[in-house]
Image: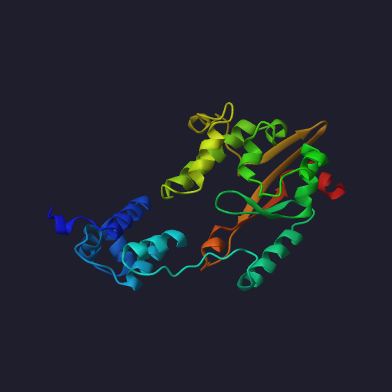
Length: 270
């Protein structure tokens, strides 16, 4: 290949995201309404994209907004997506909606996490559950820095001792984190988190474990046991529709629901 036709940084990024989505150049061209030759030229650096084409490609490939900013920079354009804190004035309508979800989930737990699984907000029901499982003194002594939901599940001094099906939960959590980390850049936040989790005792290798012979249930439930009490919860994750802010795209609201009548009765009386 002629040195002047080596893939540009943008071209390498485009190819990486296309391959990550398991799309051929032909499929991407059809989805974008351009020719396969144009996609090929963009990837090899023979053509430069317009600003609109960068955003169009990023949208079609479901590239996270932060990485779309990186693609714009690689193509010679300024980023367009901002990263605002959740408590910024411009975020008030969304922030109020999130708080309404948390409050409306009572008496069941709900949390707000970012892409690195840091807990940004939680409702009172989560505090009651953690107080019961870990002890109210331990919860009250938690540091002011955001707690990490994944680490709480995996740490030997966290929720791990009271999760009956911890090995099963750990297996699926590590698999999910690996899948999400694959789509990050080298400076991503999930890589360090994954390394910390894999360093905990008996965690490495869980995700490669074979599936049980029994038929899998519809959803994975967190099964807690504390004394004579047994609780089972599954979760539903909500995200903001069409976010145009990097921080907001990272935000996930996880709503927990009872998986059996005994758990429902426990929360009704908590």
